[in-house]
Length: 166
Image (spheres, rainbow, N blue to C red):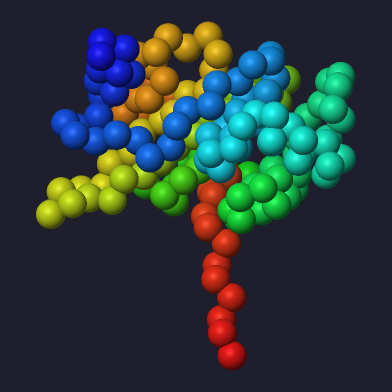
């Protein structure tokens, strides 16, 4: 019971994230873990799909936005935009992959998941971060403290539109 409370201390009473956090396992699989979290697939499944789409199965790799989009659509029917420069949380959709801790010199950062929760009964929308970092303590896995994250770029993720019937 204590660990559940520690993980969800930032949420309003009674709210539980519909997305289970999938933690990264390797030094550089934060985007894989973010995709796994959004798709609710295992890291193994995401790695397999990535390999099928041309991402090296071993050794160093960098997953470009086109591959992120291809993995999401093929694995979970989710559509991803290209990276967009971040200016405020208000511009994000209901689900996004954020690039945070970005270093302009190395052009590297790490990925986390942003989720927007629609307001209920006149209350405003609000959002939270699912931090997939494997070094993050349980009380930081889900956080509404958005100001502690400094996003540089983001990818919005939406369900694939339904085909129109004839």
